Length: 436
Image 1 (cartoon, rainbow, N blue to C red):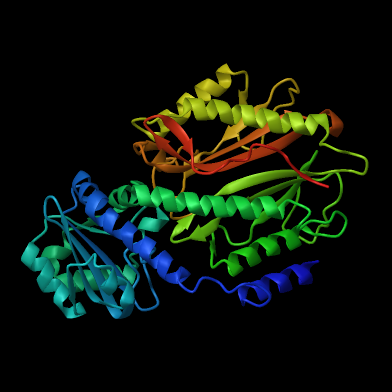
Image 2: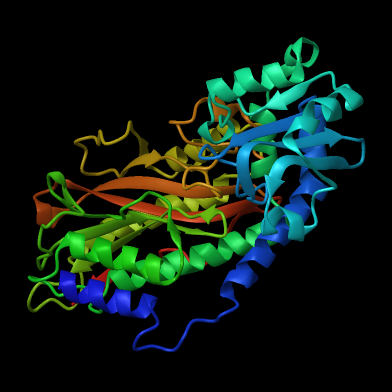
């Protein structure tokens, strides 16, 4: 099974045995990314800089050491040292690049000036900024792209006067990335639909033959789909796993999928600098079964009830922490129990819940405000309209067919928060998938 799946996907990726791919797909994706850049620089960056008292933002890269924001800034070739310099001019941010070239930054039309690397010091001095933001960050890896050597180099290049004005741009970068434009939301929704379609196919008899297919086979089939479609991956290998009475039994291993297994997928795709994060749940029918056992179906239905409460309760809020606490109040009022991660109670009469809604967008775990317990600093960030986030939960419900042990049902799909509340970006997991 493993060799057959890989061979079919490889042939498809090479265009063998199938219709040739659209020769303009690469150009189409570049045009979308370019339009996003125009919108972000025109509409988002000025406010992000002003809100964080950053008069100038400098991003430093060198050949072989690219900043996490390289894609967002338009890519480009850096032969030695390269500098992206953004200066707040009031209603517009002036954009200049030094020591950077190539089709992407030059043809997109978002930059006002291209110069050599040795011009950057004079450029900065002519504008005399009081605070210069650089990508140093304590809490956000995606805003921490300035290496120690690059920091020392920049200080030398700018000289003592401006070296002393360097400050962390962590919050500014978070605001710049997490404040979404319409085309960003539309593009991320497209990535979500691709993720959903591949995951649903992975948990079907198209891919799985009980007693033959391994968890690893399914994961590699999904990776081959990404390869064939020119997609990146949010979390490297998809997590394809089995949950039973004793918890998770195996994840993306050579464990053969058997009848009666309860399967989960946790994964995401990368598409035009957007990365999704979602889960799917499936049951493998035993011989003679036409539907999942009542206890397992009930566990899935309870998880959906929790999600419904979350969706009703989460709203725009002064902080992400305030938004998640409102959701917890709604969940507890609905009769569910709040627990620590993977520590369900022994009470079979109640469904235990863990919530971990987190920012998403340009990484599987995003850069902006987060409602998740594992991002405590970013729980203090404002939860604004237009924020993309992954609405993740785990519901633990007793299953009689498992001797009363609780099944952990994970639900996770990507959404956007608006003034109306939580809005889905594609059809979410609404049914327990069945493998015959």
